Amino acid sequence: MFWEGNNIETYKLYQSLRDKNDYAGLAKLIPSIIREYPDMVRYIVNRIDSCFGRHIVYVVDTNKGIKIGYTKNDVERRFGETRYENSNDFQINEILRTEEFQAKGAVEFESKLKEVLKPYGVQSDMVMPGKSELYSKEHLETILSEYDNLKDMYKETIGLKSPN
Image (tube, rainbow, N blue to C red; front, side, top):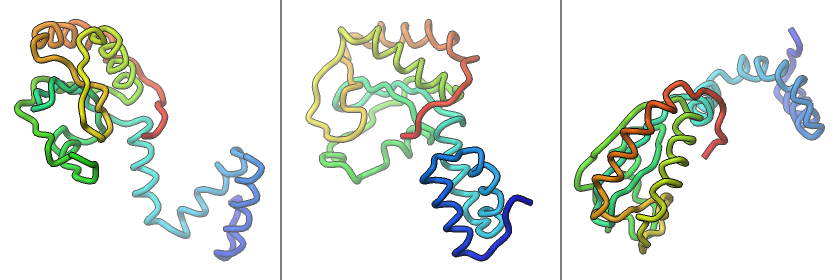
C-alpha cells in the first residue's frame, strides 16, 4: 500500500503531490484517500460521468426557439434549473430528439450540429448556459434532418471531454 496515515499527513502529502503536479504519485495516493473518505466516491463518479459517461444530445422546441445541446442528465432535469436570470421565462414546448452518446461523442456531435446550423441561429435574452444554441423555428425541418443525418457518425466516438 502506497500510503496509510492520519488525516493531516494524508492531506499534507496530497497537497505536496498536487503542488508538484505529480499525477503518478496522486494516482497512488487517491485510493488511500478514498479508503479514509469513502463518501468521496459519489463525487468522483459524478466527475467521471461528466468527462467520460453517457450524455444526451437533444433538440427541443421552446418559447425562445429551437434549442440544441447536450446534458449528462435528462432533458427535463437540465431545464428544471432555476438558478439563472430569466430562467422562469424559458419553457419547453416539446422534446423533439434525444439520443445517447459517450461524452466525447456528444460534444463532437453537438459541435458539428452548431457548425452546420449556424446560419439558422437566433439571438436570445436568456442569461443561462446554451443561450447561443437557439435556432429559428422556421428551419425546424432542416434542423431535425441534420440531426438525424449526422448522429450515427458520433455513436462510436469515445474519449474524454473537459468537465462542465
